[in-house]
Image (cartoon, rainbow over all chains, first blue to last red; front, side):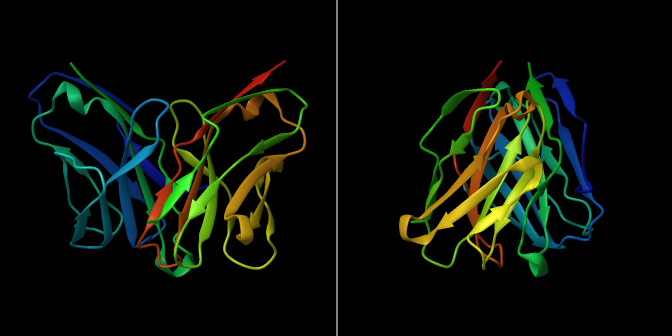
Length: 113
Length: 113
């Protein structure tokens, strides 16, 4: 079992609110990722990090931002939520020295009204 | 360009029947291949991986997959499907360093009694 945690699991929020989705891992993995997934659809990489103070945008453009101040923590922030942000957000981590197998959290399902 | 193709969007099988989910990849470097399973509302769980060596790999929950370099395929199989196997299955390809990681669009499996 992978030790990667996402909170909250579900979030319903109004348009214009600022939100932060939390992701933490206790495995000491150097790499972390955020994916966006609409129900029954493929995963789209929106952000990734190769280590502390390293963040990059993924293949899918996103209005969210991320930070990596600590190895174990990789929060995702939306400054002003909109209905188009309604989706499931999956966090993952991997370790470079072990073949970069990605381990996933349970996800946060976000609904913006 | 690197890509992963899962030709079957949706598959329905009877409980106890055998299962094969197809995955084809296009990758310039030596591929590292993965299968993940996602239950509704959950994150992705690693079923199995292939890095090198024996081209038939065993995973959890009775699944296996065979790497065929000549066909650029990594098909997932299970001899006898259980109702609890109903889920979304994703094939993925990456490199050992993990700088690139690509998911297929997924295959949804329905199991009927």
